[in-house]
Length: 461
Image 1: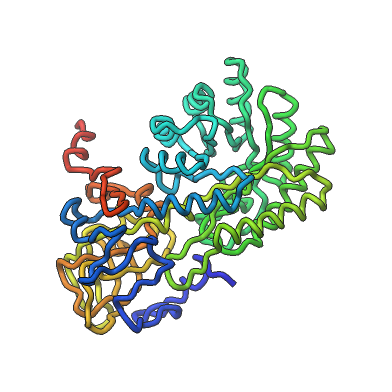
Image 2: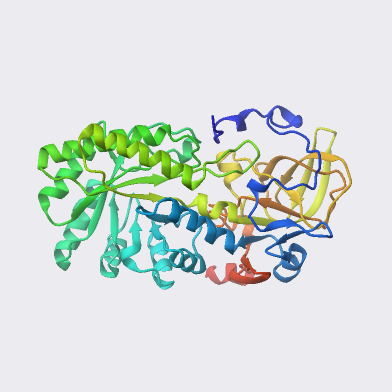
């Protein structure tokens, strides 16, 4: 049984921490599956990434800062590409997107999934070939769809009858025939947090399978004859460890594919199984490798296609978190250390919920370590918190840090590549941190730090 966000996280038993968290034998030790592959402790005890000391990064770029191990991201992209050699692997840009990452993904042979006009603009400006871009979203505007058509985006995932009519009209005006997929809500209750489960019936995405809307949407597209319906799409959620949900989803969506064949004589050539593959944020998480996922998903699809007498469609998947999440850590500076009447020790850092909202939003758990030195002190169960004016401003709910952690220390939090910078805010008018990519012992800025001048430039009052 693999852990998931809605499971052991809720075993919090007060100041002693959750049941799965145990005092480490060595408070300086790094748990390899939580960190970018080129992170280790140097001879002086400080963390290094790709051979570069984090103290140099802090001095050169300040804190907080997102630190990206570029070779790690690239290697994870290649692992998905190689594990799924005859499958289109779409990197889910919503996890984290900037022009440098678009170029990395493109160079490693992946496709790219976007879900807004801004993400599409970023992809195109970085040179991603439009035919390798997929466009998601439950409320794409006329302007966004127009731009996608004019750019020649490879596929558009349809999410409502309004969008079918909107895109049909635009395509007819331009005399083009864009490739489309129907997003199907298959009624699967994925084992994850309710806010990132996306395939149950009562939510905003897709066409309901149970209510017949998905079949009606496919029939409308086929009967109109303007859009090129290539297949069906299903995405059941995010941070998922158990593939049983994908099995149920594939069975139901392929049954719909058979229904479409029988009703219209059209056997759709493609199937997108979505993404949402989980990563390790703490020692309780046990994610699958891309090779393991490929083996299981292929078995599921082959079995269900045989049952429905369907040819196996051309598959696509959409990993985002699984590629960028483990490749990044956030580097903070400790500002205060406060013991509250023996109940809990709060370690306050110079960031917080403005650079990582997931702990507050999803009750997500993270790990942390002292980053600028090794320590011989005993482990201390602490809570790493931010500088914002919210009691829920928590970065790491429970973690063992050295008992001598003090102001001025650097603390690193792994697994922050996915959704942290993407969902970052300017709460309390705090500028968002930079993203620093490190490769072969050299650092480069790929997203600069926001400044107070940036904030004031938007304030025209």
